[in-house]
Image (cartoon, rainbow, N blue to C red):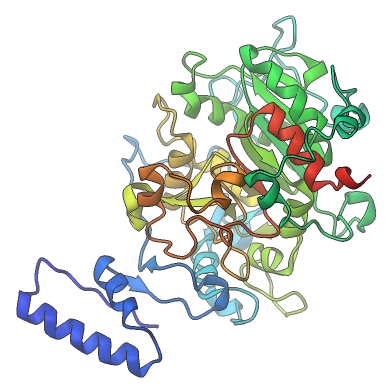
Length: 473
């Protein structure tokens, strides 16, 4: 649909009324409700998606905003001689003539996002190691060069400390309470056949590295994570300020002090460490804090879906004839819960609460081309900066709603999102305002939800029991 721009500061009162009347008639003729006009009046540069996969969103014509540029234009850290057409850059724009639209595979906005994004050569590009955020990790003795065994948790499953699922089931403590959490989680569905790497052929396997950021005073939170969802990831580590291999915690130093207010510098080093040491071993990277709960079976199922695989292939259907149908290049995907900062779609970003998910192309692009931005900035809003950098590099947050318009990634706990009568924070309603359908309530969360936020250790264990069917064991 063509882009229509309305500027209330230019049109006079009478002209605005006339324009609204014309729009109303046009929308009624098209079968749209007049209420849509109000949304059009509220937002400028509106596009109405035509696909059922995106019918809950209103998007601005351009969600790319300019960023403060470094004193010099950022350059790729390392040249990559194997890139398409002999380019020395890590990434390059699409050639749209190589892509054939398919209306059933990707929503309209999804299609636009993957078409605008650069295509990234997947071969590893070396990065420097002499300064932050690329300096690596230290072992328990403080020696540099430590590379953690991210398969440790899968190879050595933890023995729950001070509790067990059997004990929980005996006293029915977690199963018998009928609260909002219980009701919300009854709707969650897991794949009938979880897609583990061992069940898939090597060519179709989806290997996920999960990384959590924490610090030594909060290492007690890691027990519940390691006892519940983390073992289902194919690899796992914790970016901390103290190495403790028994907890998969790794001391990854960063610029500035160890503080929540300095989260951006911590995540810069985490992402660089993941790229430097594990890039070639994994297909996806899920990053979040020590209070998130991930339903890994649903995450894996989503990442292995035809939609996501086609999106990462630039919208090209598998089986089509194209020079891009190979394992050497990929379109970067940034997946997660969408917020519009201050209610402005020009400030769309993926919140870090439930974590965000990056494919190989996205991780490489961010680490090798994006770290020149905000090099010394001190802030806790690392998620906002990650999304801003991606926008500058041509990558917008990819829509992650399910086919009925429900959310997969959640900023709060299951019960908080489920209870429509619960009082939510004012900022949440403002920052979700551009997405008018189901900001909260029974239909907000997808039955194939992927991740939740602000989950304490007790709830994490309880949610695990409820979703894994252990109450019926």
